[in-house]
Length: 156
Image (tube, rainbow, N blue to C red; front, side, top):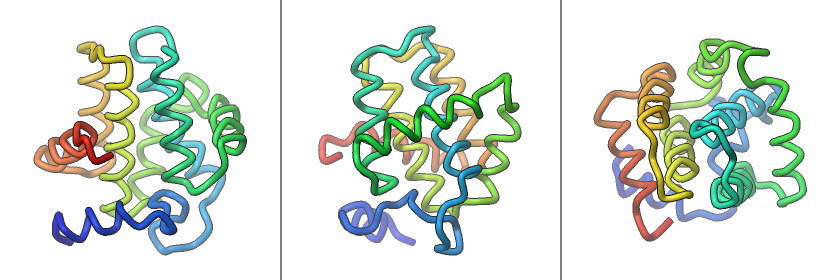
């Protein structure tokens, strides 16, 4: 898929990128919680959930999972039970690696970078965490940079 195809996919508001699994089937609770738990880990990476990060997280879940803001908050509550140490980071990334297709993984990493960047401070831990998640779900270093670049794009 070309970058233009990815932009078209992103621009289609009726097609939330993370609302289904890699086969197009309804999203399982385990995959949804794993994806949202990774986003929560990124948001809490600098020890506190800043208001800007919370807003970016809720808005991203709402848009990318195709749910209301109330449902997005419920997704966050549900995913709290999946966060480390209750489940290992390896378990979470493995669920995402096997549950989402390549484009969905890029979309999730883009959202993760949007959450990290929301408070306008990127700690070394947050950068390392984002890179680790990208590698663990099967993205190449070039794709990590692409996801980060998409998150920095003013069009998002």
